[in-house]
Length: 213
Picture (cartoon, rainbow, N blue to C red):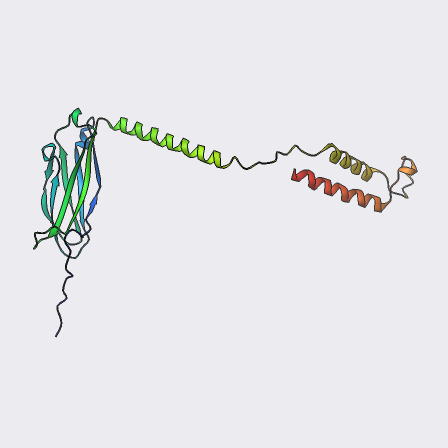
């Protein structure tokens, strides 16, 4: 005999509820924001019924405040702000979405969504920009302080002695080699091949030293 697969018993209040967005912001000067949409998702394999509650129901109109969501489907809940007055600016209201099985009355899960009325979207953007700039400046000060202990040696270029040795080596390489009888340079200034090799080697070291500075 095949045993019927039993659905695990759901504990009251522990079922995760998936709603987007989790915050509603209404702007008094933008009438298009006076209507917001909440989307309730049902990723489960059983149908859910839902109910929308509010801390200040006189300020809002909720279209389809109760209904059902099929398994692995979603439903849009339209919320309209109907009391746009300056006395409500900055006041935080709350919506609570309760879900349960269609055959049960107990709430399996709930999710709260906050709602706020602000005077202007431009003022909100200005405050966010000021906050972002302030955070950026704070971070800049932090990084600047952390880099202070590092003492970097400022290069002052090659020393005069290094330059003088380089000039001497170049002059030595330009002098005639021993055995060059056609040169007009006095004989005592003629250098051997080994002496020129040493001068070339020293000049190479000096060049490397200059390039590293």
